[in-house]
Amino acid sequence: MNNTKYVFVTGGVTSSLGKGIIAASLAKLVQERGYSVTIQKLDPYINIDPGTLNPYEHGECYVTDDGAETDLDLGHYERFLNIPTSQANNVTTGRIYQSVINKERKGEFLGKTVQVIPHITDEIKNRIQILGNTGEYDIVITEIGGTIGDIESLPYVEAVRQLQWELGEENAIVIHLTLVPYLAAAGELKTKPTQHSVKMLMQSGVSPNILVCRSEHEINDTIKRKLALFCNVKQQDVIQSLDAETIYDVPNLMFQEGLDYVVLEKLRLSTRKQPKLKAWNKFIEKHKNPTSTIEVGLVGKYVELHDSYKSITEAFIHAGAANKTKVNVRWIHSEELTPENAAGMLEGLDGVLVAPGFGDRGIEGKIAAVQYVRENNIPFLGICLGMQMAVIEFARNVLNLEDANSIEMNDSTSNPVINLMEEQKDVTEKGGTMRLGAWNCQLTQDSKAYDIYKDELISERHRHRYEFNNVYKEQIEAAGMKATGTNPKTGLVEIVEIPTHPWFVGVQYHPEYKSTVLNPHPLFVDFIKAALKQSKK
Ligand code: GLN
Image (tube, rainbow, N blue to C red; front, top):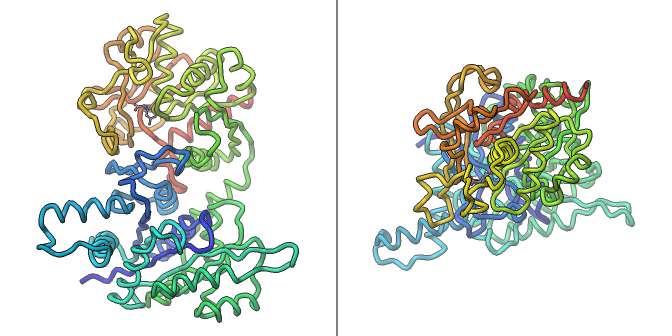
């Protein structure tokens, strides 16, 4: 028996209230008060994981060290807490059902009828407690995806009800995040949607212990009292969450409102130590007081939905603060970019990042972007597909291999400079079968990468099926593009650079996943530094 305490975060009234940010901010505050904490996201959809989801559906797919393809909220958890998450931190309904059904097929239910209650709810409870049972955490915060009232969240709410009953309210509490809308015509904040959503939660047997109310206007004591009265909580347990200038302000705002304090009180944990937010606030100070501004281009095919590139834009913010620079992003749709209009569309940019992606839509635009920045000495960072496009561009325009391509885009090209990885050749299933998670990369000492990482052996996260074709390595290197990072075991090329260019780096891995507030990613920091230099030209 260990003493892990559980905090559940549910959402009411509407989606997109920022449960992930509230959960991450609370976690940050208790972490900085000295508690060990982790955050978990339960997603009520039937996909086993978001790896098969189009980014337009659900934003970026975030990848952990252990190779889990997860919800983008896990990115926020890592960026706030500066500790890695894992597969156990993201569970979907698909995964829950899959394991229950697998157990049924093995005969593990001994002839019983398998039902939502107790079998699905037991599986949910197990998944919640897996993290607590490691003994590593004082507090586990579990965010329940979706909105109260959704049919698919019901088993999760029931699991929370049972766990609270089993563990006692001093060990498991529920925070309900709601919206208190302002009706301009009436000039009033309205509490009714919150009342209704709490009522719905109560119908499932769960009484929230704390309300966090998102609002565009100050929630005064009269309204707090009203919310408290109708939702059966104490007035001090009604926490207002006003719109913030940046998500990184939310921990401080929640501290001012006393969220961490009421949570710890309810869990009977000491509130004596105050959160140490010095390093965090130093970051905010730099982020909010930049001494320069630069503009970088982000070339991708999902740019209509900025969440598709969440970790990249957050990494820009971290790296910007490290350089005391405001990084403005120009979103560039790769499908609109051509060799003819590249100069116009990329004009004035201080750096260009060509984004990850899958499939052939927009790739010629990405190649056009690479050509422009390579020829015009503009700092370039290519990530995953972006790196592959850099290799193709180089092969086509420097080596004159006109039809150079990736097998992913054209499997009959006579110059497959990007090839399907050997281990992928027999893979037929799409879900969870890419080269995923953390792999080592050995850096060449005489390289930009080495200067940046200041280490010979690094570990970065991956999500790809295709790779640099080593058959072309000699030829490409001889022409001036160097492979400066490779997997020490397999020789897979992880990094390419053009040493004669001021800053041209393509990486097969995803550095953006590992950038956090307290540890901005060195590659992004250096890219922004190079862009800053470019801007001064
Ligand atoms: N589609 C490419 C591959 O699978 C790149 C993947 C990515 O950008 N994440 O190798």
